Image: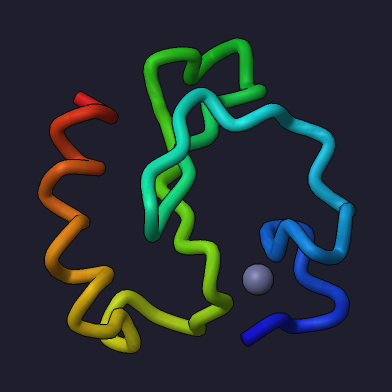
Length: 70
Ligand SMILES: [Zn+2]
């Protein structure tokens, strides 16, 4: 699912940041805030509104994504 105005839906080509890492279900972005350089964002390829909307495949991979982000 893609939301047309979402900058994190890669198909929209609105995201200017290059993902630091790509997994099957997620990509990981670094922070562009100079005061928060240690933060990352784990983004699912599928547009969802909340983490409660993650599907089974995404839940299965989120632990790996968190480990990579750490
Ligand atoms: Zn999106």
